Length: 248
Image (cartoon, rainbow, N blue to C red; front, side):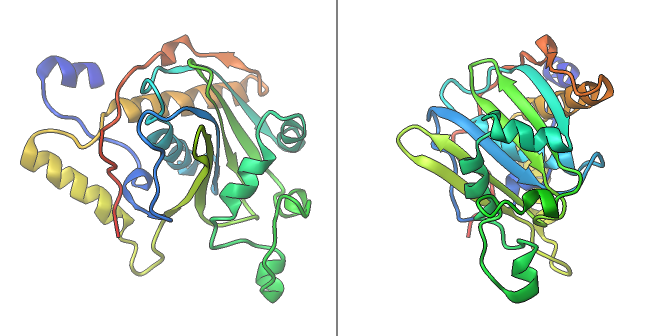
């Protein structure tokens, strides 16, 4: 579909509403910054929520130095292997703690008695999250990223990235609750803009790469959670210069 759209020179838009909804706080990775690692935290399962989390991650990381150059390998981990990978440094516990600090919905003691808690330092995550999943991503340029699906710990989507010269950049992809679920309207506005201007606000290659990432991770799961090389994901594109998410 992407090849056909490029060949026939018509705009093609796709993807999740998370990249275009509001952020709490209103921050983005500086365009052209050097990103070492990122941890994205989401909820849901193999039902499309993981796609949302992956594309939210991608809309941030595509802004790193050099733009997007593709993904070298992926691995999907589940259960106790997720915590073991964190203990081994496969994903950063500090970044996870930073991402979770942006959540408005921490579960556990916060629900019981309103206590603010650090879910990582307290060691309660394995008790709260019965079936964790980690989507481990190795980018071609050496950047590392992990999407952690932590049902039972939170109920929203948050990210933290270690950025040279900026420390940890973290935010929540805010999804207004019912009945004001206006994040879909943010995506509809981008569709309307495309029809009016005959151009897209951001490259469809972002969604092409995200879709390929999800497919590759599910293949990893099917192959008993093996690490898989992904030469098919050598997808290059440049992000839009201006942030495209809803602003306050």
